[in-house]
Amino acid sequence: MNKLSTAKRVAVVAALVEGNSVRATARMTNVSKPTILKLLAELGDACARYHSETVHDLRSKRIEYDEIWQFCYAKAKNVPEEKRGTFGFGDVWTWTALDANSKLIVSWLVGSRDAGSAFTFMNDVASRICTRVQLTTDGHKVYINAVEDAFGADVDYVRC
Image: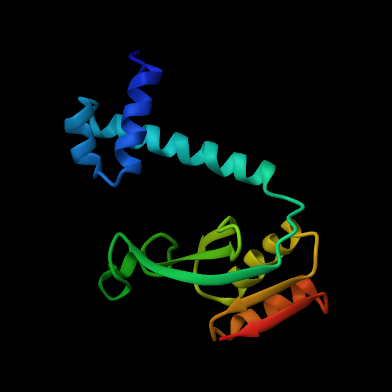
């Protein structure tokens, strides 16, 4: 089985980080698209493990929350009937918590835009912070109960 050299892996990742598409990266580095996608998945897993193991006991002062919409497979209105309601087909939301001062992503979650995802996400953020913090969110209603559940009274919470 062929293995990419470290130099080739670095070239692929560098091209992707610079904003090149997978197809352009394949042309530039002479690496096949499936190999690039496999490397990208492995890199994502490694980064997630690193983040999970190291981002704890934060002394953040201000955390800003937001959700980003995207679709997988097709937009919700175009998902075939047999795939509707299955996660990964249609609307998907990436929840983000950003330390406003350092720009560190404290936590993220890919899920639906509902109370269950809000609770899971907010509890993960709370587990990573060791000081009283000011949270800023948009007006999405599910944040209210999720913040109270995760932080109790030990938070300054602002909805914009």
